[in-house]
Amino acid sequence: MSITSINLSTLPFMGSCDSTRAQMSSKQINQALTHTNCEVPYVISNEYYSFVKNSTSGILIAEDSGKVIFNNNEIMIIYYDNLKSIKIQEIPFYKITSEIFASKLRFALPNNTSFKKGDIIYSYDCFRNGYPSYGYNVMTGYFNFFGYNFEDSMVISESFAEKAKSTYCEKVYVPIYEYTLLQPLFQDNLDSLIYFPNIGEKLDSDGLICSQLKANTDENTSVADKKNKMLLLFNSLSVSDLINIHKNQNLTQFSVDYYKSKIKNGKLTGIKIHKLDSKSTLIDQKLSKQLSLLFDNYVENYVIPQYSDLKMELGEEYARQVTKSHLIYHNDTKTTNRDALKNAIYLLEFEITKEVGCFDGDKLCNRYAGKGVISLTIPDELRPIAMESNLPIDNVFNSFGKIMPN
Image (cartoon, rainbow, N blue to C red; front, side, top):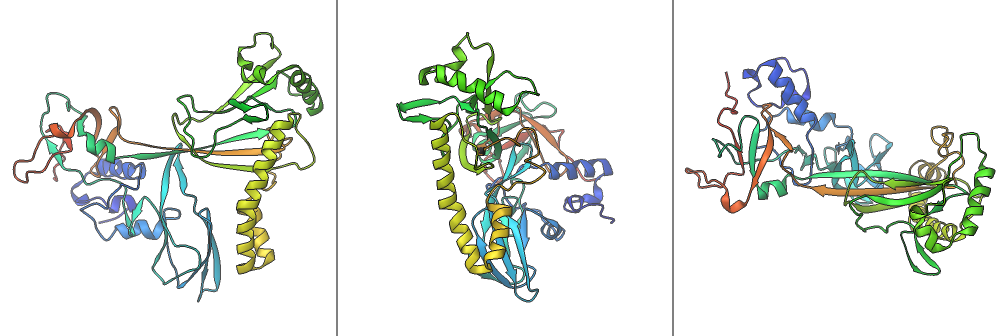
């Protein structure tokens, strides 16, 4: 049998499938959303190792014996003994795979760990113990269920809806300029203004991270003019005015930019702050003080310790290269020449994540290109029971949806 792709080779009973159905199944495997709950399929063949061999991001199998000489949960540096080579791998805890969907890091060898050829160095949730895992083994029944599974509709149980989760992840970038005025979310006291949420804090249904007051100017307005205009406004406003700036009907020459996440009710799981300009200062001294403190803490508690470990293992020159390339934001032509960032002093990087289960209206599919949309989620105590095995059925598809081999 001629195999046209890795995905096609893993389809059970592919020899009896028509080409259109096989291609649909291959596409579904590519679009599968993974989670740490995902399982290795019961029906598996040797072709599954093709996924392992050809994966460039989901898993790394050791080419030779060696050692992990650096792992800070974002980048991993490994050394192969016989190959005499060093490799740098980016392994963020959440790796965005498509739009806002992400794969979560399942396993990674810790720092200063030796390994042998063929060992798993790291893997994401699309692999479990070295095997591809991008779905669930579900007890499925094919029969009519009061019309709720008509045609492409399907019925699932509460426990399966909770188990079949997916991970959302998004990064929101906020540039800070000399003339930036951020609206405080709330005020603890006269000296303490809160401009954005803390790590671990849950965002509201609007997904608001922060909002920035800006002057309505054209593209040709200079930075100095923008600064002077915002400075005049800043000197005329109190803290209370800033907090309620969107209610002020007199500020017709100004508007508010809202930095929001597409993920609603998500959790802020990371904040990074990058300094792009060390010479300029902000007109809002309280905001400047808070950002300066945040940046100093970021460098002192994150960058410097990682740099010290790298320097001890790899020397000063290589440690500087890795630090500039991976640990801190570095100026390059792809970013700092953009109009949005070329005059920025800071760049704030917010990471928002969320885990969600299945809901009515979501689409599920199997490896045979059988698809269905969830029309009803039933309580576990109302699940049908298989007569022969006495096992509860978690997925009810219509009796005409079963694909039989030719």
